[in-house]
Amino acid sequence: MGNTLHPEYNPLVRKLDSIFPLRDDERQALLNLPMQIVVIKEGQDIVRAGDHPSRSCLLLSGFACVYKVTGDGKRQIAGFSIAGDMPDLQSLHLQVLDNSVSTLTPCRVGFIPHEALHDICERYPRITSAFWRETLIDAAIFREWVTNIGQREAYTRMAHVYCELMVRLRAVGLADDHSCDLPITQAEFADAIGASTVHVNRVLQEMRANGLIVTKGTQVTIPDWETLKRAGDFDPTYLHMRKAQAAA
Amino acid sequence: MGNTLHPEYNPLVRKLDSIFPLRDDERQALLNLPMQIVVIKEGQDIVRAGDHPSRSCLLLSGFACVYKVTGDGKRQIAGFSIAGDMPDLQSLHLQVLDNSVSTLTPCRVGFIPHEALHDICERYPRITSAFWRETLIDAAIFREWVTNIGQREAYTRMAHVYCELMVRLRAVGLADDHSCDLPITQAEFADAIGASTVHVNRVLQEMRANGLIVTKGTQVTIPDWETLKRAGDFDPTYLHMRKAQAAA
DNA sequence: CGAAATCTTGAGTATAATCAAAAACGGTGG
DNA sequence: CCACCGTTTTTGATTATACTCAAGATTTCG
Image 1 (tube, rainbow over the protein chains, first blue to last red):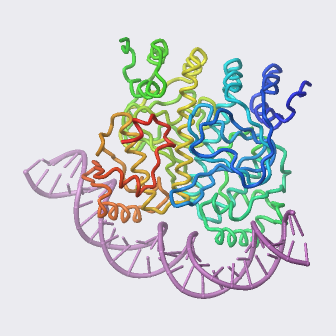
Image 2: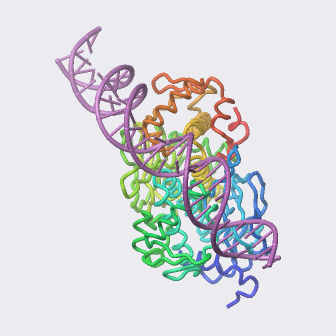
Image 3: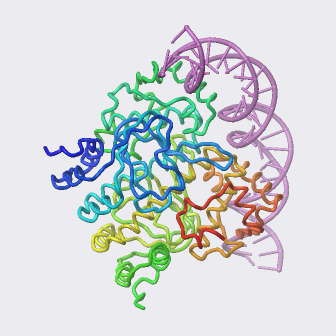
């Protein structure tokens, strides 16, 4: 009903709506936000550390990652972004970007001017809260990643990352209970969990041998969710979803 | 001029004011926020993961840490909190806490009801932005910690943490250019950088031998800031301070 | 089909963990 | 002021997890 202008907002509107239901006028205001839609091919930076953006991006489809590069050129992926995510929403209130965002697959990205975002926030306090909340969940995920990388061994870390991705993909309808398409390379996982590619490869072989995951190309199947959760020391609280979504 | 009610707010007001100058009415509204002040002794939880808080805390003095505990009981410190910080401000929009906050030294803590915070945000949009921004900087720090722990070796990690603490302590007047009081034990540093206590001890000895730091009790002196920065691969951009504060 | 990217394997090495115990420090009470 | 206690720091020896390097196999995609 009225999603005429930007049906593309669906992943975002659906996400915000699932947390606290939007009123019609709020939903409409979101759908009316101006958005420049761009297709970006795999392995390209969407934004770069050091930028002073005047717009934020909404990932409409594809996989992306938030990353930083150290002085000696090593890349740390600090988070994965999926449809409905706004990986650089923080630039709305922080002038300089302290991280880059890059595509892992071809992506459809919508750019929304900060001006329009400030405007909608001013008129709809509940939307301000919803956006703020999104950035707080991002922070909660970073906290969990600090813990994951700092305290768990590689095998557990890897299982944990699989759990997080499964839950988040399910929440936006990109995974069913048991499987999903996960076009992330072992080298990318390595940069995400702070391990070498070789080690990730060996860990994955062990996980397959233990029946935690089954892979066929980029398709991943989880034969037993509870076992994977236990192996990954995974508690979905930090994703701050509604119970129904986070459970499984 | 009117700081009669809660001069205790000074560390917070000063911080917010330093980012974008507050108008008198905004400053006054902040000073009028109701706040219950409590002294908490060392090693106590201020809030605990799983709580559903109805208030947020403002650290008035002392050192605290944000931490999580893994399934097998290991503690990861995800961040240090100093005077002026609100380490659980996220509970304003996230119902369940996904981390705990504990004191590292005796602390003076002010508890501010969420109701009052929502109220001031509703009336002063610029204060909403300022609080939101604070949580965005927290997130930026978590991102940097992910990178620090994931990609740097222990020696560099440790130097990096020293750099961050020095810059932040300087910003609130708790450090001069060269030294500060840093009552954090090696075991706590270990939980922060994801290393063992023994290894932290050896790294610190190496840092002392290399002249990066000089310690006398809890007093830390940095003989050569530029050298420490280089050793810690430290770029203060992620702290999103004004140039003047972040430089040094 | 062929080139490039990704995944896999093996061998040798390094960083850091663990365990255990001793030394130094800091605060307290006599 | 000193003796005592618990905490923190330090040391040594051993072990483990994970890295690096290098090459070969497999998959993907044009």
